[in-house]
Image (cartoon, rainbow, N blue to C red; front, side, top):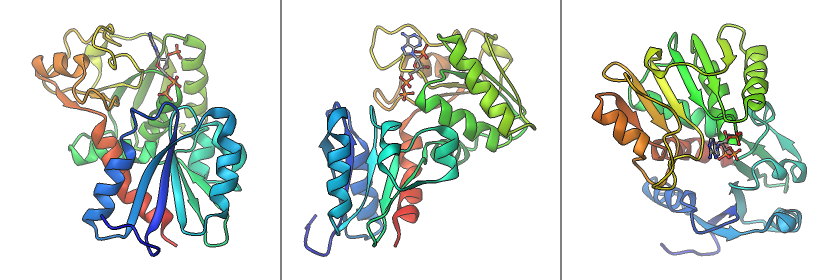
Length: 262
Ligand code: ATR
């Protein structure tokens, strides 16, 4: 790749930095569509976020930046505007810099997640979904699942209060979906989604008991690394359809391209 004065520049802001994969995925995607755009991860500590963003605002060949752990929520106070989706989810994962230097944040996680399911021919409309986790990523997937027409959504989380708060927020916005928080047997669901970090480390316990889950059900794990978590390996061995976290990120690339287009 040749980076010149005509190249559109983007960054991915993160701390820690070594797990970042979005920059590589973006460079590959924009290269494949022939767009002269280059993306670099930059290591930004939480206390420096405001200074870094104030500087990016002044860089006229910067078209935008991605934000990931731990900046997805704190970035909002440094932006000029956020989309309704980002406001609902309470987090931003991509920011565009307009030609005038305005910074607009969006959250593409929900749409990327739903698009990845659609690409794998997994239907959400009228389906019964069990979601494990109610953190930042879980907020995005829950709103995405309701928006995509899930009939029923049960949210389970270690911190039960967070599951209830998320369920109430989703229910208030999407009355057509029956949303609740609590425990449930995975075997009675069409789709089971892990949004917790359990599965990143090889000795993590499974985030949910999937006994009895087999053919006819889908198990999705939004963890990117490893690409196949223990949960997914177990589900596949039981005959369920499985989808990892990489397709969710891949599906966001076309959305990013559209979002930053000036
Ligand atoms: P992210 O932005 O990646 O979603 P997060 O907001 O910190 O990160 O959320 C992490 C999720 O993983 C939460 O649902 C968290 O559960 P709590 O809300 O109870 O903290 C879940 N999680 C993390 N470690 C866990 C563990 N050891 N056991 C169960 N759930 C865990």
